[in-house]
Image (cartoon, rainbow, N blue to C red; front, side, top):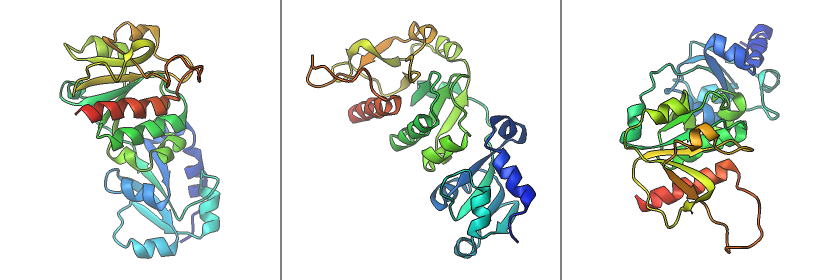
Length: 250
């Protein structure tokens, strides 16, 4: 059956963080993203074209509708609607900070831009980083723009929200890295196989409270040294460069 007006209204209401939080769900659109999330998140509702449904006869969802492109366009939160749109339940899992002692993890200190955040999740997935610890001021991971930017990486990367200062203060003998203009050249600094890499806000960098708890300050040098250049790197680009150097070593 086609998507009802009430269902379209419900899907579009999930663009709002308050509604997502109250309902405990989020929206994903497109064959690649939806396909990656199916089986990793419980699907409450799925609407798709007849062609997509016929190609995926075993897809599991509490409720399913076969829809035409016009219905999908009315429900879509994207400029260009896709063949499938789904509503998934948010993860509800305990935060285990002890993984930082065994794995390389990321921390985000008030990263605000949804595109940056989603790209960082995708970068983490590429480099085998399974846990990202976020300050309470970081963008909502279930924001539709964040979800879309992850390109399905959200299925494999676990995102946790907590006080970064309390997290770092509770770590014992764990290397905590951050990127700063007055840090040590990342290509000359010794790096560890495990620990926490902190990335800061787009405009303000790492906050003063978190900065004083970081015990390994890194700097990504421009080339050639001394040349007049851009003031800073985009946080997602800096994250990719930093993760790549850690993985190059280990």
